[in-house]
Image 1 (cartoon, rainbow, N blue to C red):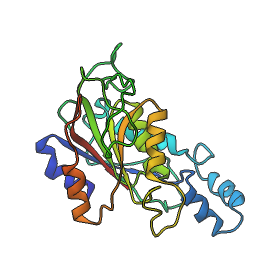
Image 2: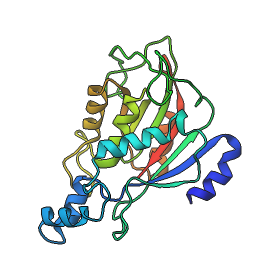
Image 3: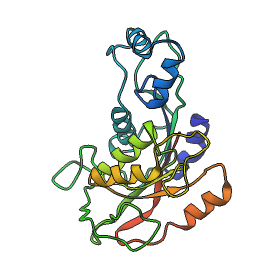
Image 4: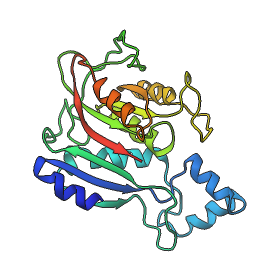
Length: 242
C-alpha cells in the first residue's frame, strides 16, 4: 500500500512512508509479553535479538516519525522503515503510515529552525475560546504553522508521534476514541485523548485533541470541516495513522 500510494501521490508532491515499530515499550507490548509468560523474562529474551539489546521507547519512535516527516527526509518516499532490526522476531505492532506534502519542506537549520530544518514557531499559550482546541495553545499570529493530523494518538506510539511533531513545531490534531467526557473505547484502557493534548502543551507545542473514530466517515468529515481558521495555523498537510 505504501509503495502504491507513494507512486500515485508523488506527482502531487506528497510523500508516503511507513514506520515499523517492532518492539516498542508500550502498554500493548507489555500485555503481549505477559501472554507469553513472565513479561520481564520475555522482554529480556526478545531483547537479545535486538542490536541495541533493549526495547525502544515510544518517544524514540515518535522522533523517528518526526524525522521522516521533516525537510531532512524530503526525498524519502515509498519506504517501510523499521525502527529496529529484529532478525528472528516478527513485529506484533502495526506499522504507522506517514504522509506529507512535499511543498514547504525545504529549509536550512539556523536560529529560527529546529533540528530537522523546520521553522520554530513561538507558542505563547494564548487561550482560544473554541471547544475544539483543548490544549489552549495556538501559534503566534506572525507565523503560519505546518499542521499534522495524528490518528490513534490516545496512547503508545501514536501519542509519542503527536507529542514529538508538536515539539518540532507542528500544530497537531491528535485524534482518538477514548475521552474524559465520552468515556473509554471498547478496548477499555484508561488513557484519554485529552491527556495527549496535555502532553502536547507540556512539550511547548500547540494542537487540538479531538474524539474521532476514523472508521466512521461522518466523524472524519466533521473533523476536516472543523479545521476552522486559527491565526497562524494552516490546513493539515501531514497525516499519520496507526
